[in-house]
Length: 460
Ligand SMILES: C[S@@+](CC[C@H](N)C(=O)[O-])C[C@H]1O[C@@H](n2cnc3c(N)ncnc32)[C@H](O)[C@@H]1O
Image (cartoon, rainbow, N blue to C red; front, side, top):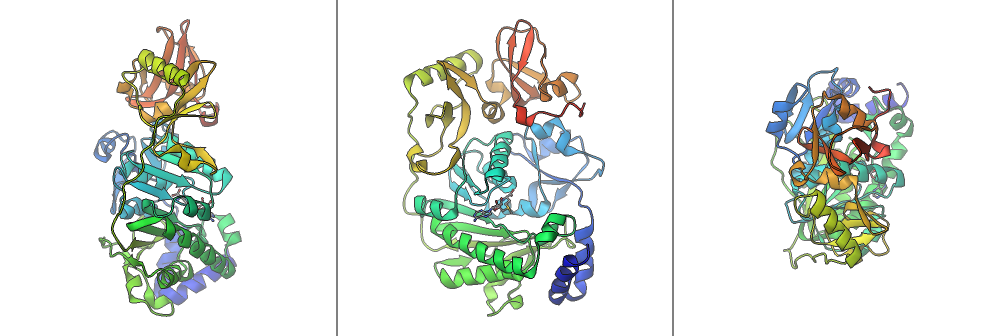
């Protein structure tokens, strides 16, 4: 671990003095897993009652808990695939709390993959409004789409774009924007050899330039009076206070917002940069040696002015044959239609879009909205995202399994099993939480659990 780790600690010692010792120890200590309960599925207090693991609340996030049993493997529990929680560093949970998006708003997560913070934003919005979740990295954006799906997010558009292209298309439209910027990742240096290999003082400078570039485009996306949250998981003042100071110099229409402070929050450090800008103290620093998590920097900015106009509504453009097939599926298998407005047909998929589809023309779109199903040869076949975005009480036929039921693991491994039921689609659930679809025919359940999500057979 020598070399870059030592260089990093020397830099930090110049800032922190004696405090660098507990800081370095905390960075090296293995962190217990932490999870954020998905309030789209259940309330934190209800989860706490049924949790298979002992939990300790995260002090600044009502949905967040640290798992107290070091042997627990929450990623392998069926509640995880059912989207009841997202495994997330406690320090990262503060983004959703500080930005605090409201139902009905238009929210943009500009650097969203793999989706820890985006899924939190959607839950705070109660799936109501528009969440544009964007990441330019093609591999990471696929994981982002999958995580949004697993968590039952139905208000998201997933894009793979450069911030400049979004700024041209959506200028001044968003109520809140999150820039969880790519950074030198100093919070991960102790346990991530790849982050250590990449880290150097030059990387810090390069990342600072990229962060300023992203922020500049983010600023154009915010409506008057809207909020912009800047976040990093790194400690270097060059990537934190300096980026914000230079942003404020070139964007006088923004100011730093004083956030409600928890005793474990440290303030931003104006004294670590030149020229001295006292309001930088309004930023928040979380340190690994002072509370749970590996540390983060946050700065909440507000654009001056008042909201001027309301947001455009999506229209319906579903061709009649596709609409007929979708309705006939809903009549036969569901109690009502989960989505009536904003229906479109795009690349054989029927989606519920949260904004006018023409606003997405020419952009690299992964998901224009909630994927309801495929329309092919006159038939509608439900998609996995439909299952995860609905409630079991909305389906006519549900196979509800306990976590200990061997059929549950068989389902997650993609296996078929006998089922004595009428022919048709069955919503498979762990207790009352949907996991996916099966199709029952001739006493057997055909498995429609997506291949990419299946448990390896070795995990029996
Ligand atoms: C810190 S990670 C985001 C983590 C994510 N917000 C979460 O909570 O799961 C930073 C992300 O920025 C993306 N990124 C890299 N360059 C970018 C750019 N020029 N514009 C926007 N995002 C970028 C990376 O692909 C990466 O996924």
